[in-house]
Amino acid sequence: MNLKQLSELLGLSQTTVSRALNGYPEVNEATRERVLRAVKETGYRPNKAAQRLATGKAGSIGLVMPTAPGDYSDVHFGEFLTGLGEEAVRHDFHFVIMPADANDEMGALRRLAISGNVDALFVAYMRGHDPRVPLLKSLSVPFLVHGRSFGSEPDYPYLDIDNEGAFYDATKLLLQLGHTRFALMNGPEPLDFAIRRKKGVIAALAERGLELPEECISHTPMTDEPGQAAMERFLQLPERPTAVLCSSTVLALGAIRAVTQAGLKLGEDISLIAHDDVLPHLKPENFSVPLTTTRSPLRAAGVRIAQRLIGTIKQEGPFPEQELWKTELIVRASTGAAPSR
Image (cartoon, rainbow, N blue to C red; front, side, top):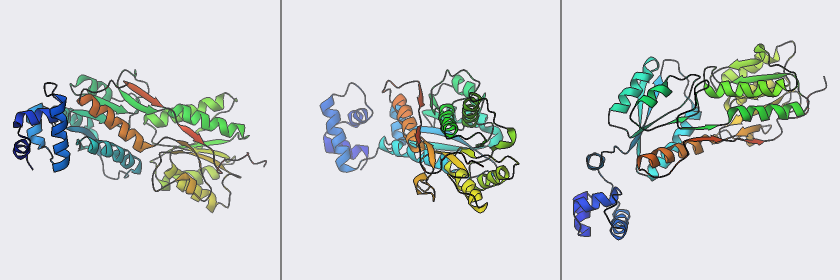
């Protein structure tokens, strides 16, 4: 069914139907409800090109995705996009992913913003002193940041989790269990979340007069093979750590494999806490030794970012400019008292 047929069915002009669908205030509520009821009954979908001409809105939110040879695919980002997509579908919105060479991300953002193909932008994988923030602030398109940029004034709209607080609390738990030798398996060093998680660990240790040695820190892609390699290296140290914090359950998967292959027991010889993004195929409670985790679902973050962006485009709200979500600390069997030896 097209707009003309829907209009004839309702006995209304195409202009009135279009304005009812697009929220114009001059259409009375009874007419709007009648139009929306007919849309639901007939399965009508507005033509995006025509809708754009009528409203000046593309009905899309945009993302630039940097690509480079040898890049790892990322299950974490896939889970985030699933949440974003779920909410976009509810509002009949599209999201536009623009691939770009990793060295041209700034140019690609600028081109996408001025293309007219999107009504708003979001960016992820924030870095310290991220140059994308001042660029986005200079453009005339609404935007939202997933994460924050360490070292930059937080005067931009964002949704983030309290990464520093999460890893501070996790470290405090391990300290309370008597551990004094720590290691951190972190994400790539320039990324904001990795910077803040490291700060949280260091701050908690400093309160006990302890330090996190450089040889006990790894910064890698968050996949299982780097997790295994990092843990193997930690276990070969003269004073091997008894407490390990992982920035992802995927990293932890490899780390636990290394612990098992070394003939050690998780929760006894080595205690481990991982961050859980609530990945559907890697549940920490289903590990052979259930994992203690800091928990914050990525899919929920994707949903919330879509809600805020679409609501801003539709001039709904108000929405908070900045949101900082606390994580849950869920204690399971992978953490135990520090070994006596």
